[in-house]
View 1 (cartoon, one colour):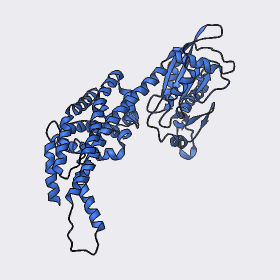
View 2: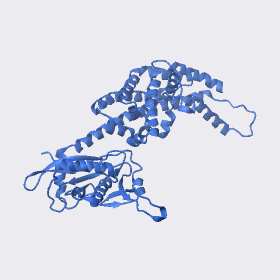
View 3: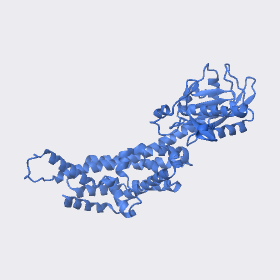
View 4: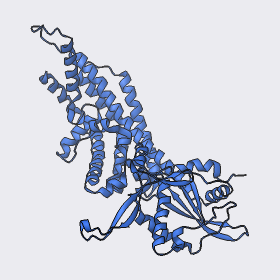
Length: 455
């Protein structure tokens, strides 16, 4: 049996030269990026925290400097990838072979016919790599592929020579091999043989077991074409998700920096009788007006306000407007220094690996028509639990000797109707297990109701 399979595998040499080998080059380059990212994740906790659970969101929202160009290039390569995917479906539907050499010939022909599309993917990956070697990870990650698909197509591209590794990558892309699990035809043959032995009379020791090689080839063909189709479908889906994430970013940014939206929003919520889970009015921050030990307490309270929104759905602190009905615009004096102070307090007092807030200065008229500056602190929904760092002095205890210093106690808060509740961390963790990234998603729910109506 092994000799026959070895003869079948010799047919693969037809695939190891250009233009067919381009599919292996493509996968090799993508895996290079994945390994670079994983190594940095393991060696640097900061990198792992920065990337989080979603590589596409990380790149679009935190790293990409030219979204317009990325969008344009992604749209173009998506057209090429869609064609390869669609033609893979057609090949699977029409191809019926009983000879392994015929299967390889058809796959080779398919790759030759789609050389331009494969090259466009390679060019796209090269362009991403020039920007940052980590960026092609967007094409090969858990969001799109899932753990099983990734495992079946993952090999260490730095372990063996590039020539040998690219040959393995060719076989992986074309469905002829699953990473370290050996050739597809060998696995199919073992399954067919197992079915024969299971159906055989256990008392029959004399009848020789004959492997139906036509059946093995037919089943291998189905599995190979399924795997090849799956590969290009996942690449297509990854490109689609990049474009969806760009759109998400554009929507968030269009609201986040839209002065007209925020002016309309504040004017409308000012007249509502009660606050909401999404916003909170403050005439001023307590830490701006208090001194000494009380200032530290007010800093903690401010951080608790921020984390309470971040641990729920996100929200907005509206500062410079009285909280009592009827609400009035009172403004903030010396806003620049107070805003810097607030940012510093968040940086020191809120424990989270990424930035969660956006500060937006809004000029509004008070009841006398005088323009005054207010501050909106817009807070993301965090994908992980966010805590406040409360610093407590360590008290001397004779039983433990003379000890002095400070202790940092994490505080976890959530927004509860119009107030704040302190909770155990696990309560927040449980609600965030399904989240893949931080987001301003709540802004999309505000826009329909609070955006300025056009005449």
